[in-house]
Every structure is written in structure tokens, then in C-alpha cells.
Image (cartoon, rainbow, N blue to C red; front, side, top):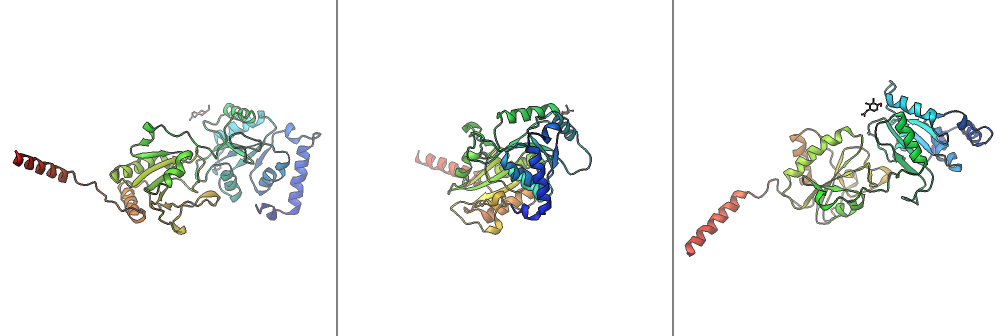
Length: 332
Ligand SMILES: *[C@@H]1O[C@H](CO)[C@@H](O)[C@H](O)[C@H]1NC(C)=O
């Protein structure tokens, strides 16, 4: 991170002094009063560099940009007053580069609906023993009581960290929902790298308002092309699986069959410079028939295996059957 270069030496000095103060037993700043820090470059410095010394856990509340104070913010503030003082409490947004980096670090994504609550721990966690820190996400209605319970569970090591995780593999009978395969972290690579299939993946996430609506449209495309054996329609909950995370939601991309190369200009932009051989669908979504035909046109361009829009006409089969019937009669 080049953050430190952007801070004046004087400011760093002040922060370090503050940290020393907070750390000293005599003047335990945090024990005396609750401190809420606003996420800035200087705060990032404290959290990620200076904090490395004493690894204090961090509770982060991402609040919407809007000027009106939300009920959730009031609840969080009320909880913070009662909270274990071993925390840093940080308020953030989703606007500045520093804020976005924090979201990304915590496995939260730009475009998710705020407010969001999460926590970062620098302690060892058996689920992901090699990680330097672990991110936890609060799910549910943000109330004072719920925030207190979340922080207790967090400090007590009872939460599972985000990232590097997978939902369980779906049982075979529920693996497909209307022709769409449910992917999880555990089967993502295997399915998307199937050399025989052009695999379409739809990434959705918590707090993405359009995602649920787009699911319906996506299913309609899957149904329309249900006869195409070389095409596999899949989707994945990016909030619950440690896979490459697209920079926006919803994202749809095609992993072409037969190792067909994807030019860099068509790749999906992922966080952490992840590169997958996947072509992003750039058309408009939630436009009904217009979206469906745009996706089908796009699939014709990008899929490695050519396909027909319509299933083989059943009428022909009937003809063949009746001809057979005639033949059989002749024989008799
Ligand atoms: C969340 O909790 C608040 C306070 O208890 C309540 O007023 C609100 O209706 C709850 N919202 C939901 C979606 O449950």
C-alpha cells in the first residue's frame, strides 16, 4: 500500500503517538471512552500497519452516503456504548478508494446495499489457518442487541470467517433449479473448466437489489436454450463462496469450451487482479425479451460450440414414426 507515502510525516507522528497512548496501560484511552473512527487513509494506517503490533479486532459499520442518520446507525452507536472496549470501531462508506479497499479486504463488494456491519480479526482461525486476518459479516437486522451478540460471538471465536469458504455441495436432487446448476466454492473450478461445455455463470450477492430479479430473466434464457446440450447454465452466491469476486453485481460471464481463448478486453474484471477465462456479458439486463435475445445473440458469438435457437422440430419425428408405421403395415 502506498498510503503511507501520501501522509505527511507529522500526521503519522500524531497517529503513532495516539496509538502509543492507546496501548499504554496507564492511559487506556479505549477503556475510558468509546472511540469511533471514520475510515480514512490515516485510519487504514492505524488498522493495518500500526495495529499489527497489538492486533486489536475491528468492528466496521458501512453506512450509506445519504445525509440522514439511519435507525441502524443509532442502533450501532447505542451498542458501541456498551461494547467491549477491546475493539476498534470504524465507520466507513463505499465511496473513497480507501473505503472500497476496506470493503474488498472484508469480502464485501461495491454495489452492495448499505448499511452493512462486519468485523476483522487478526487472530488465528482454524478455518483458514494461513490467513493474516479474517473477516466476518453480520447478517440480519441491525439492532443494538444483535450488534452486541455479534461482537460477543466474534470475540468468543464463534463466527466463521468469510472468504476461502464454500457452501456445502448441493445434493444431486437440488443441484438444478429450472435448468440452472447451483455452483459453490467447492465445484466452481471443476464446472467452469469443463472442456466439453460452454458454461455460463451468474454471480449474485447479498444486498444486490437487482440480483433476485435478474435470476428470473436468467432462468428464462436457460429454459429457452434448455435443448442445447453443450451449454451449461450455472449461478453462484458470491457472498458465501470464496471464489473470484467480480467488481459489480449482477455479473454474467461465459467460460468457453475447448479452451477457446478469451481476449483480455472481454474478461470479467475481478478484484485482486484475478483472471479467469471468462467473457463478460455487457448487455442491458432486466429488459425482458430484449435481454433474452441479446444474451442469446451474445452466446452465439462467444460460445465455442455452435447451437440452434430452437429444438429439433417434433413434427419431423412424428412424420418418421408414421412412415415407419406405414412400412410396418406393408410388411404385414
Ligand atoms: C428491525 O428491527 C427494528 C427494531 O427492533 C424494527 O423496528 C424493524 O421492523 C426490524 N426490521 C426488520 C426488517 O425486521
